[in-house]
Length: 256
Length: 256
Image 1 (spheres, chains in turn brown, purple):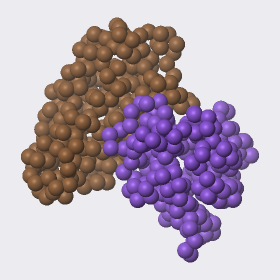
Image 2: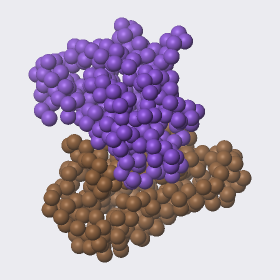
Image 3: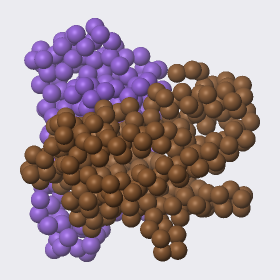
Image 4: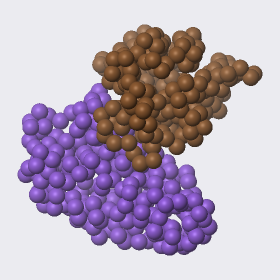
């Protein structure tokens, strides 16, 4: 990775950000490689969806934490759309409801998913760290921590056909969350990148923007580490957390 | 585990707390089983010590967060000894310095350990969650989250002879941290347990005390999950984090 401590321009910062995504985004994680190529069991895919729900559920609260400290009404108006996307707008369903559809389609009880009782402690610690980062760091860092969205369309374009081809138990309607994100993420990422390029007007601020993205990559990566440990490498499922039913472990993806 | 939602007395709560420790304390974790029986390499023991440093370093700040919200001067005076134990008292070395001695004895550069640059993101997320829990929950829950100390002497009594017998690269002076904790932990745990039994005067408060201990067990357990994933099960060391030198991976414990 290039030196991020002395970036001379906004364009140099953008190049560094794209390099960070290329090296650290969680599309590279072994768990995602398994997920996207039909090499997991239904029980392992359930564990992923159930834990990832915790992350999804915190996104509007994370965005509200940003709004709550934002003096600029234009930025608030632009950022508000993210909450509407996740919570739904005027009765229309949002991303969290779509994620619950995915969980339900995988055979999970939505009430159990929403209770968060089955999620791994490490998921909660990582997700909470993200919400707190956005609530406590500078507004510029809070905005910059969303820049993983720059790399999200690639992962969704890989995931949708990969999961449909890889798993007999995954259907097109369960992919609705990802289809919607294909349109939303580039709009959000473009806005955040423009904001960061405009406001990071010193090498020190450019470094903080890059470190915010590195932090966020850690948040995403460590969630997959925990799944990989508990559900793939047999490192042990912590007591009381989601344990797939034997028949769901027996139901394998097409390449498993 | 017994039902913790309707504990009828302080003694019933104590029994539930001891049961939680018996089932969830991290002495049961596979990484500790390997550590205490000479089945790790020097590099893996280094990874443990370096990550655990992050936890140690936050303990006095965690205790200061408790002091900062404590109106009862008697409780503050009793609790202050924990900060002195870790940071040192009037020039005498404390637990954090002893932990750095352990790291140095294992061949780690203390400056690198203190920089925290090599620690796993999951370690940081878990440790930060603990500090925040103590700063944000009720004082009773904050006190109760320290009750893992009830079970610490057992683990130290297993660790000290286990590591000395299991590893040619571990010497008696490196065990100073644990030897001191053998005296300190029972005193602290006894105080915290008495406080919890006195102040948890309703079934609802007794439940919160038990849940604080469960939370803390998760904090400790998930740190070992992350070590186990990255350094034992070859789940991948996150980019930029501590990677043992080849010669330290080749230097194995006596049973490895």
